[in-house]
Every structure is written in C-alpha cells, then in structure tokens.
Length: 76
Image 1 (cartoon, rainbow, N blue to C red):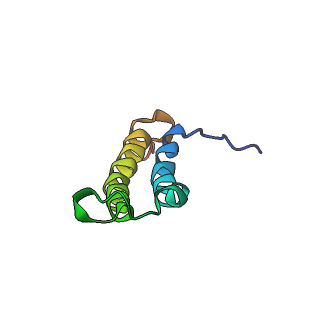
Image 2 (image 1 turned 60 degrees about the horizontal axis):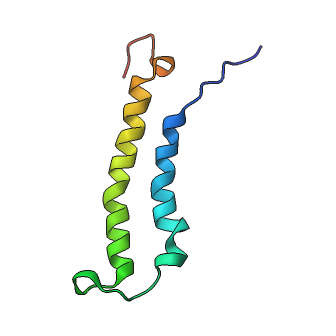
Image 3 (image 1 turned 90 degrees about the vertical axis):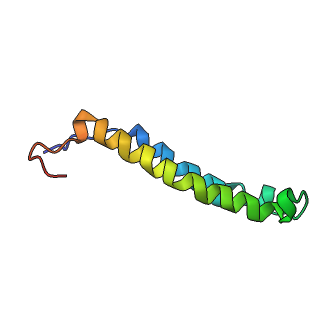
C-alpha cells in the first residue's frame, strides 16, 4: 500500500534560524564593527534569536492553512 506524500513547503522557514546561527557563523565571527559598543557576533546572535520565533510562527501558520494537513477529527 502506498502512502500519500504531503508536500510542506512552509518547512523552509525553519531553515532560516539554522542558516543564521550556523551557516553564517564563519562570516560574522568578528569583533569589528561594534554596533552599540558590543561585538558584532553578539548583535548577530541576538538578531537571529529574535528572528527564530517569527520563522516558527510562519511555519505553524502555513501548516494550519494547508488543507492537506487538517485533521478531519477536529483535534488541534
């Protein structure tokens, strides 16, 4: 029996925090410039931390709007 494969393009949003935290780390690992008097890496990680909930929210929003992902039983 074949299972129906559901495409979930909204999961791409979860790659954003991964790229911000790990993928860009070799590029942003420096002290200068010093925005606000703090090292650049600290500002970058703070920004990535603030963007992460937005990416998770966009993923959840996409899942909830996707009719193929809706539970016919009505449970959340």
